[in-house]
Amino acid sequence: MTKRYTYSSIHLSKQLLLKNVGIGSQFHNVHNKLVTDPHTICNEFCKYYSSIGQNFASKIPDSKYSSEKFLKGNYPYSLFLQPTDSEEIRKIICNLKNKKSYGIDGISSIIFKKFAQELASPIAEIFNMSISTGIVPDIMKIAKVIPVYKSKGDAKLFTNYRPISLLPVLSKLLEKVVHRRLYGYLVKHHTLYESQYGFRESRSTTNAISELNSHILENFDKRKMTLSVFLDLSKAFDTIDHNILLKKLGHYGIRGVSHEWFKSYLQNRQQYVNYKTFNSVSLNVDCGVPQGSVLGPLLFILYTNDLPNCLSKTKGILFADDTTIYVSGHSKKSMFDDMRSDLEELIEWFRANKLSLNISKTNCVLFVPPNLKLQDNTPTSHCALKFGNEQILQKPNTKFLGVEMDQRLSWSAHYKSLNSKLSRAVYTLNRVKNVLPIDCMKTLYYSLFHSHLTYGLLLWGPKNLPIGSTKCSLGNFSAATQPFITLCTDHLHSFLYLYGASDRILAPCNYCHHP
Image (tube, rainbow, N blue to C red; front, side):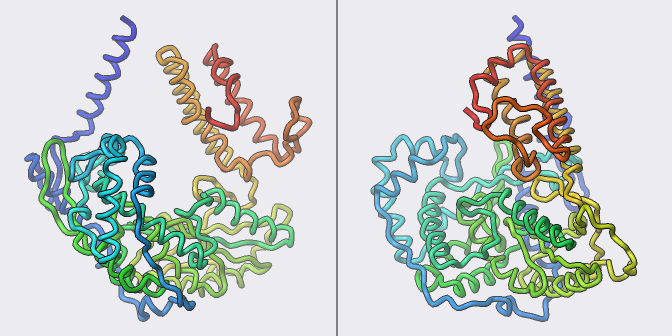
C-alpha cells in the first residue's frame, strides 16, 4: 500500500510538473504569435535550431585579417585513413552503451550489440569504401533533434529548449573509426596545443585548474600577482565556419582523400525535429560542428588550436570552449597593459574565425599573494579591460571549471559554494530516506554528495592530511585546513544522522571509489 501510494504520488507530481511548464501545448514564434498546432511547433523548432549558428555568425564584425594569418608551424606529414576490419568494428560495437534511443534509421545500439558478430564484416566493407573514396553517405548526416526544456525561463519560448541530437548508430561507428586515426595522428605529431585539456585522453578539468593554480602559487612565492581573464564563448560549437575548418585541417596535414572525406562529412548535413509523435521537415545545417557526433569535439579543439598563437605577452589554458588567459608580474599597470595588448589581438582572432564572446559571463580576477598588501595607486583607467567596446567585469572571485577561485586563493568562496550544495544534498537524502531502498540511497549519496565533495579535492582540500593514518584528529591539520574539516564533518554528521543505517551504506565501500 505504501509503495503503491509513493509511486502514484511520484507519477502525479511528474504529470503536474509537465503541465506547469507547458510542454507540448503552446509556444511563441519569432513574431510573438501564439502557436498551438503541433506540426507548426515542430517546424518552428527546426527553423530555430538550424539558424542559430548563422544568426550568431552574421552579427560578428569582419576582421582585418584572414583566419590563415594565425596559423603557424610546418606540418609536412599527412594523415592516412587506414582501412578497418571486422574485428575492430566488432570491438567498437561491443563497447557501445546500451541505449534505446535511435536516429533516423530507427535502430538502437542494443540491436547492433546483439548482432555484432554478424554485422561486423559488412559494416567494415561499407566503411572502407567510404574511407577510400572520401565520401560519407548523406543518410548518415541526418540528425534527429529532440527539444528538452532547460528547467528555467518561459516554457513557451523556443530559446529555452536544449536540442538533443541523435545520429544513426552506423554514423557513430564510422566516426569512431576515423576519430581513432585522426586523434592518433595528432598525438604522434604533437599537433594539439599543450594546454588544451578538453576532449583529450588522460586529461580533465582538474588538470586545467591545476595548471592555473600552480602558476599562481609559484608567482605568490615570488611575491608576484597574476591577472587572469576568464573568457566565455557564445554558441561556439554552432558558429564554426566549415570553410575555415577545412583550411585548418589542410594546414595540419589532413590532405588528399582524407581531406575530401572531412569535406564530405561536413557538407549537406541536415536535421529534423521530433516533437511528441510529429516530425518536422528536414533543414540544412551549414555551419557548426555536428552536434551529438563523435568527431565534433575533436574538430572543435582543432579549430581553436591556433588561438594561443595570437598571445605574445600572456599565456592561455583551454578546455574546449572555456578559455583563460593570464599574466604575472609585480606591477599592476604592466600586467593590465600586457593583457590589453593581447586582448586586442584576440579580438581579431575571434572575428577572423567567426566566433563571438559572451561578455556578460566573461570576467577577470587579480590574484594577489596573501602576505602582500596591495598599494593601489594605479589610476582606474589603467586597470580597466575591454573586449572591443564592452567592459570586462573585474571580480574578487570567479568560478573556473566548477571550482570557485578567489583572489587570495584561500578557497573560502569554494567552501561557501560547496557548503550550499552539500546542504541541499543532505536535505534531499533526508526527504527520501524512508522511501527509497538502500541501493538507491547509496547511488544518491555518490551522485549528490560524494561527487561534489571530492571534485578538485587535491587542489582545495587539506594539504597536510596524513595519508594512510587511521587515527586523525584536528590536531593533525594546519589552521589553513580548518574550514575544510568543519565543512566535511558537519555534513557527514548530518548525513549519518538522517539515515540510521548509514553504516550499511558507507562501511562496505571504499571512500575514494564508487563500488
